[in-house]
Amino acid sequence: MKFYLTKKAQLEAQGRLQAAKPPLAKRAVEEAAPLSPSAGMGVPGSSPGGPTVAAAAPLQTKGIATIGGVPRVDLLPLEVRAERRGAQNVRRAWLGVIGVAVVAGIATGAATLTSMQAKDELASTQGETSALTAQQAKYSKVRTIESKTTLIDAAREVGGSTDIDWNSYLTKLQATLPADTTIQSVSVDSATPLTPYTQSTAALQGARIGTVTVTVSSPTLPSVPKLLNGLVSLPGYVDATPGTVTAVDSAYTANIVIHINQDAFSGLYTKKGK
Image (tube, rainbow, N blue to C red; front, side, top):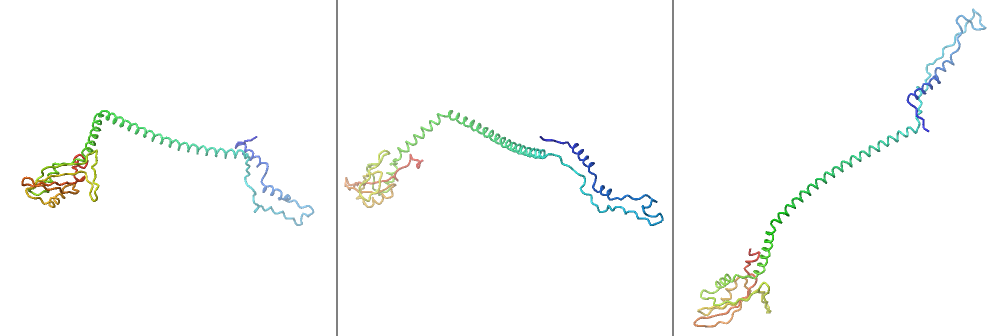
């Protein structure tokens, strides 16, 4: 069982304690003071005219220290102090909880704000995506035509990969011949986009993509080495083999077999040509 005293009760208890215990210095003075004889009254056993006995000197109180002071009594139970300390700890704990709650609230608010901004950005992006999708649907025919055009371009590129501009090539071939020599006939055997050209099995012969057999005519006997040396400047030239020379009606005809490589392609339908 716990007993609690009010401040007034504590003060009254202290007052009663002071009244019950007078100061120690006052009691010491009262006990030490002797009874002094009355004035004109002799000491028993002394004559009236004889010497008188001197009165006792008063008690010297100087130097006597007052012990203690205002007495105080703490009647507050230890349980009350412990309860007060516990209440302080509880208040501090609650302050800590409130601080944590405030920080958590601020963090939650910031996270909520960030989430709302992200949702707004997502909604805006989704709106743009929907608009782009609608535009794509509107121009779907154009996309189909573009796809077909791309397919056509690819097919043309494959089909024209082995194209040779023969008009330009024969003009360059004529330019390598002597001035009095003309081309009578031309025979071409070349690769196709689907069939590669058959390579020679003879040693020391380069790769080729076609063979051009040319029949030339000259009023004079042609110089075969001169003819072969002039062919070296042709685009895609690999090698050349001279044939027979025949005299017909005061003119001479000669056959020349020319092998050419991929440098003779025009590149007109390929990306390089574009």
